[in-house]
Image 1 (cartoon, rainbow, N blue to C red):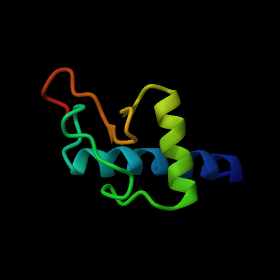
Image 2: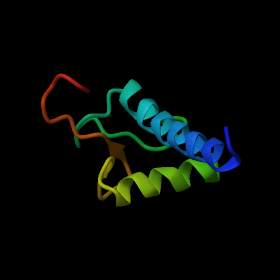
Image 3: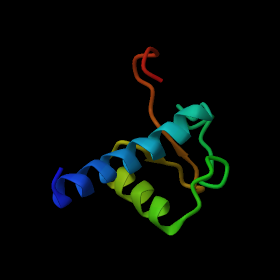
Amino acid sequence: MSYIGALAAARIGARKNIEKKIRRKGAVSVETAITPEEARITSKRELGWLNQLVKEGKIKETSDGRYYIECKDGKHC
């Protein structure tokens, strides 16, 4: 695997890990949203990925700084 390929794989893995941490805690709505600390997202790198995922609309942020992954179909939460 090339260096660029390895970086891309690491990036994808990091993003999936952030999503997994939020889902694992059951944060699938505004009511169940959690803080980064509750999800054990604490490093600067992870917080950067979290912000990027919010910008992309993959993770939602509440007005009080909690996060969740919107569960629309009830099957993939």
